[in-house]
Image 1 (cartoon, rainbow, N blue to C red):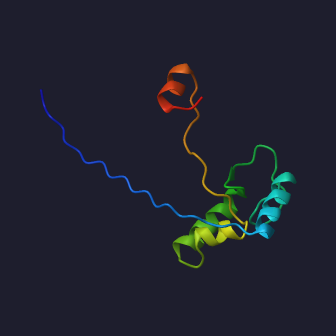
Image 2 (image 1 turned 45 degrees about the vertical axis):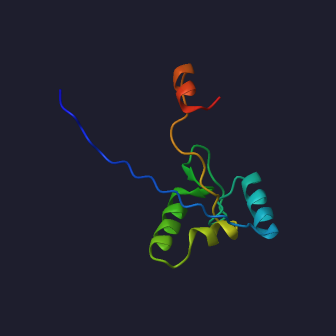
Length: 103
């Protein structure tokens, strides 16, 4: 029998972002009209949406964040990006729901 050793590192950055009332109204309005939070254009049925934005708008925002032109918290504060949700695939049966802790 062999032994395997490995190290698991988990880091959590807790960031609190206050969203202005104007931004909240903007988000609510655009989401109710099924529009992109970035560009404001209509989202089509079946189109990939990430954090309330078209995939292309999301990628543009990610590039700007990586280049330090804007911060993620600023985009969230201004109502141009949703906060990250719980990622991953949803449990598909009772066993996986039990393991994930979701109901």
